[in-house]
Amino acid sequence: MSTANVILGIETSCDETAAAVVRGGREVLSNVIASQHDLHAEYRGVVPEIASRAHAERVLPVVRRAVADAGVALEDLNAVAVGNRPGLIGSLLVGVAAAKALAWALGVPVIGVDHVQAHLVGGLIGPAGAAPAPARFPAIGLVVSGGHTSLYLCESTVRIGRIGATIDDAVGEAYDKVAAVLGLGFPGGPNLDKLARTGRAHSPGFPIARIAPESLDFSFSGLKTAALYAFRGVPEDERSRRKRETRGEASTALLSAPDVAATFQGAAIGAVMLKLERALERHAECRTLLVGGGVSANSLLRERLGLLAAARGIDVRLPPTEYCLDNGAMIAALGHDLLAERGWKGDELSMSATPTTAV
Ligand code: KG4
Ligand code: ZN
Image (cartoon, rainbow, N blue to C red):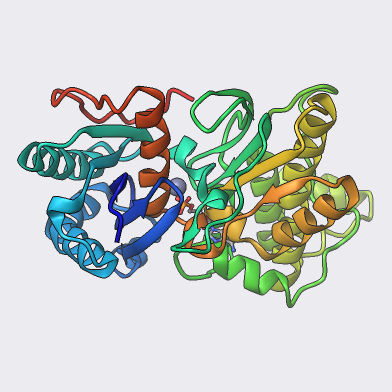
């Protein structure tokens, strides 16, 4: 087997310890993901210290498995890419230390990759011999995850500029918080998605923040509160309760959990689609849409993106679920593109992790 440009990608930014081997930047030879969901479930959220300890225990076994599954030897690797921003600092440092040590020992370049930017290449990769056709640029990029909700204008996978972002919660964060209010298990997003399929979206729905007529930014905190009030009731002090009763008005009727889920999902995905359509209209030269991040696994979003692709004739690159969620393959793929752009010169071994993104 040709081993040209065989890159190991390591991902430890949050609660998945992941490693993958990718050939030529697009062909995924292996993709190993060790999820820590069971360790964080009782806290209904990721506990940073638990996450970094689990990464430290798992990162080498996960890397060994990825290399073995790919049918290559460590010596066949031509570079090591690692997600070094943004994320939980203790978690990122585990992956960065492992990547640097491995690259130094093998005498190959190491490259730090932005996790959010890497989500955009999830729809450009595939199994060996079945990688998707190359995408045309310029493209619009949409990242919808637990930490980010952003729109990008992409000249290529490595030249991207942000054109919109959330001003408060990320859409995945809103999903997780509303799921917790509804008593659904962690991680809440996929559970809320399932429950929403059994409920009825009420009309008028929960509010969609438009922010300003031309804005490409998002806001999900008001929507989260609307869901909370619809399920538990609007908080009322004694004075307002008496006033309302004097007016002869009943308190707002509560919605069932499935109906809250369906109404919330309609508004959350509606908000994403609204700003996405605005971005596509504003940048009509973009005939490709790159989508990534955990929320791109959402059933309603996938349905709507399918309709959008058909209606506008846009090439929508929507990854299969294993490349939507955090994974090492997207890190290796973007690492490949960055190295190609820089003439295969990697980062210095002084490269470190940062909790914030530059894109
Ligand atoms: O990209 P990701 O794995 O991690 C981050 O980079 O944040 O995204 C995780 C987020 C979580 O908030 C999770 O609840 C959400 O993606 N998510 C979903 C679905 N699957 C995962 N949200 C809505 N519907 C889903 N089907
Ligand atoms: Zn992610």
